[in-house]
Image 1 (spheres, rainbow, N blue to C red):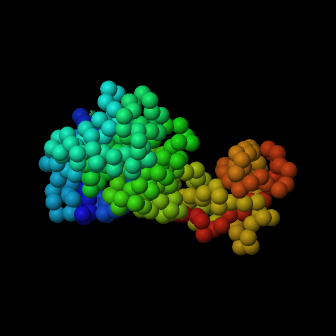
Image 2: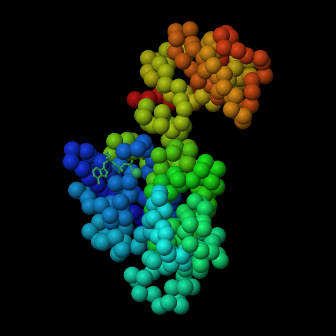
Image 3: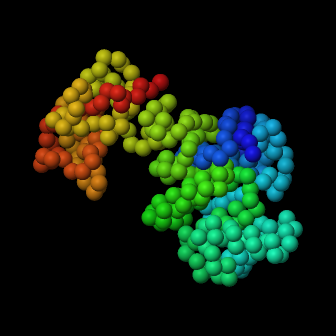
Length: 330
Ligand SMILES: Nc1ncnc2c1ncn2[C@@H]1O[C@H](COP(=O)(O)OP(=O)(O)O)[C@@H](O)[C@H]1O
Ligand SMILES: [Mg+2]
């Protein structure tokens, strides 16, 4: 296979520019995530790749081969939806075989392919069951098996884990990532959850109001956000004037809470600032400590484990931060 090329793609609904001049190339075998807040155009872009939504302008290619005018079933794409879209009256087997029906695969061969797809998602032996006999996680696996059984070149996922509870989301996302890598299939994955995106993706495209805000590997977007929007969407951050941190330049910077420590526990060379504690929140593995600087600027700090000293709101403290972790924002 080949890269997926999205070139100048736009789509409006009435006056809403749902997807606005998007250019992207997804490499073969890549786990690529469209991340952004609700309404930013993720589903619309995914549906245009799948063939469920027409483009107003631009084109989509698999390598040299233009696909945006092909009907959905001729695009060699499997899609997994948020609500599973499993047929309640069919067995697991019937659901997975559904995608093969249109392709006129002989019954013996179809049965073999269904078994193979169920084994891939750890559901071997579940073929005779009905959807109501399965858990949410198992239903989502049926949906994945149904997408995989046609042996697509590309798998699309639209918020596939949002109906599952928090613990299951964490284990299923690792499962999806492992399956995608073992099959070597190209995946485009949609989520509004920054942590989920960071955990599974080779690269992320952060979207905002129909446009691409930033594209890159998770760590790069986290460490070097290109805009205020990117800095704030990719986890908690401090957006402050450099002058408030005791630095000369009058620019806005992003400083992640984990780049701060108490001065007495910080490495030599970190910049020190005086602050007053306003709130302490012990979350188990980390403790969040909110403070304000002398000029009133709020500063959030996150420490691994609890602080060594006893601490209460109102305490005057000396903080320090790693200047190498400052990102200057445009
Ligand atoms: N079929 C549609 N008709 C009208 N407006 C739509 C339709 N689909 C999406 N939109 C609008 O397009 C924008 C992007 O929607 P969507 O792609 O679903 O965003 P996301 O998946 O990021 O939440 C939203 O403002 C949404 O209301
Ligand atoms: Mg959506």
